Length: 219
Image 1 (cartoon, rainbow, N blue to C red):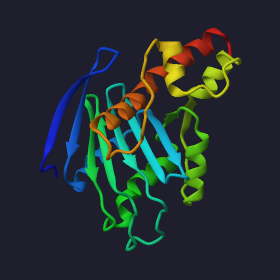
Image 2 (cartoon, rainbow, N blue to C red; image 1 turned 180 degrees about the vertical axis):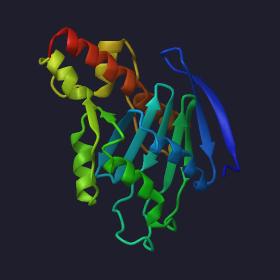
Image 3 (cartoon, rainbow, N blue to C red; image 1 turned 45 degrees about the horizontal axis):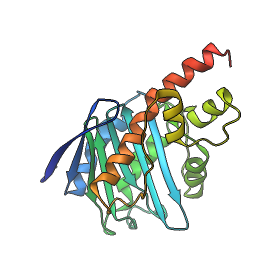
Image 4 (cartoon, rainbow, N blue to C red; image 1 turned 60 degrees about the vertical axis):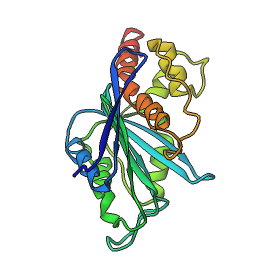
């Protein structure tokens, strides 16, 4: 499935090794499907900018692995229609990578992802669920299995901080400096996909920490 893969070791600020995998064949997207079948909690981090047309989804099942998926402008109703998305990327505990995707990809390409979002048996954690929920509803997809929202948890613990970013929340509660993602354009640099992967990977440990703090505060 993978004809050309480069593993580039990068050290995350947590001290955990992070690798970036660059995949040259779109068929390698199938490597994500076993994760979509997993019942382990997954982190969901998204950037959905309708003005620029930049729609990127990052998924992580551990603190060391993330999958980054550019989303189509619209979800075709027929499997014979085409997506309008440039590339798909992924990362793993070891890192992140990029899979070029052209307009000739059939709509069925993302069907396992939609099924995962619709499953109540696939628990999901996010930082601010609202944009993702709105986008899924707009493209006629459903979502179940919502588990945590770290933005809401951070607000409950510190009401003076309204709409804190993932970066701010990770720094406040984990002393983890993720750094801002300057651009979500995956075609820009390898560092872009790495920064996105690191953000997604921080979500699960952050959610666990915030759950513990909520219990302590009896919230």
